[in-house]
Image 1 (cartoon, chains in turn brown, purple):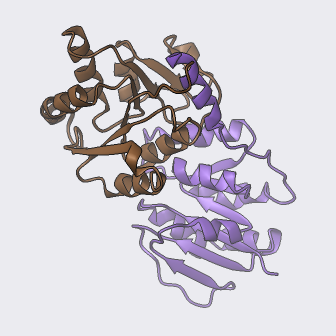
Image 2 (tube, chains in turn yellow, red; image 1 turned 30 degrees about the vertical axis):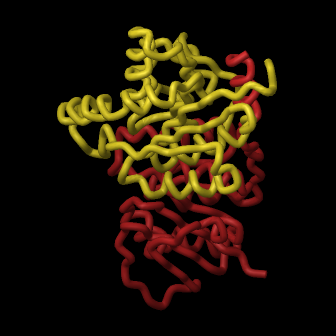
Length: 180
Length: 163
């Protein structure tokens, strides 16, 4: 790979443990290649914003952030979450269009699905180049995929899991070792 | 130096665990006589702190701290709810860990990780009614040491996929 070439990367911060895992993953990547880094954070998620600021403390020129409405609150019914997910979907379309990411990193939950769908939609409409999308399942998931992971199986997304036995149940997933 | 047990429930309400630690004499006796614990620190989160007096062991308790890292570091055994974050944090600190499952929160996928970590020899898990019995297993027991995951593998994977 040409080391000079940078890769605009869109990173979706989920919340709580998901955000913690995402920054651990990012700590293993080459920040001089994967930049600019565009983060999306739920408006209500103070913790993720704080973690992002700590992580990007010395690299502020290489990053940007958008705050968006969360697609599903803990405890919200699946039915009403359909509408908030739709809403989130329309708010993220302009973000993805503006960012034109070559790489999208998601590890759920939050606005992960709307962003994946929005970017695939923009791609099939020839509005952006096809981004590589990578979903990393949480280390908490040992026997079954999360709802986000289950949905993403049906989309052109690379799915990494952190326990090998998951790849037996979900053939689309890949295990390359425990990552966080 | 004295030995310390740290009990933590994260942000959950786990009244029965706190109650069992303080008022189940078998648990206290096992901690004191078998594991030579002489101090207990409780992080109670949303749980009720029951009243207590004349306990045979000094107790500190608080609801929340920004980070429980220090309490884990100074503990000789950690007794925790089944929260994945706490489980990983404790195993990464290489401290003996007993995970107590809250039976009021069934269908909790977090049980998966406690169960798997036990299978792999990193910890034991139990319910509130079996804490004393399970603690017996910690006498002179060496657990397998947990190694943190390796984010560099993820970095290599990205480089491969993007090249």
